[in-house]
Image (cartoon, rainbow, N blue to C red; front, top):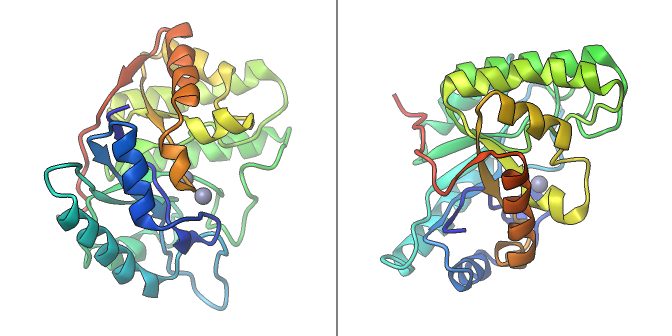
Length: 257
Ligand SMILES: [Zn+2]
Ligand SMILES: [Zn+2]
């Protein structure tokens, strides 16, 4: 891969390693673009805060660290500054206003919860609830329609394990929307390498039928994840099997007005 737009840092509390070691691995792998997309800070009311994302106060340090690396590795590798972000209807507006004060180059959509997180289930827990799947799709479609997301990370994170016919019918709407919004769908290499429930073949089949474009994403939570040719090969094979068009790079969508 010449570009990966899905890279985490230790600030999310579940990724490891120094930022510069990620850069070194990306260079070893022959990458030209290393996009950072750590789990975004969020602004929640009351005492609630997620354990798997940076705090708002950590955002300046995140930006500064990447800027220093941009400077150090200028001419060798491009490093746009992004964030992996959920669309939470009640709080997305405040989040955007907050993020716009920083030189954030792009957002990728990673919808880990439906609702507003504190009031709804985690998407990656196995469920056969049809309404939850519908809700995940509706919310993701609304997110894509904001026009602010560059691509959709692990779009099949929702761990629905009921009737596959219903799954495909419901996910078809999400794929149609991605296609009409021009949003590439990610083939998530973390999930693929770890044997998680995503990438999902039923989903990829529908994505291909709807003519969606895909992009490989390392979802790196450690430096070595950026240099894993075997999993990359598996990802490309999967795309080929379903005859999906794989993008090598994406056009970043700005969040700034
Ligand atoms: Zn993560
Ligand atoms: Zn991620």
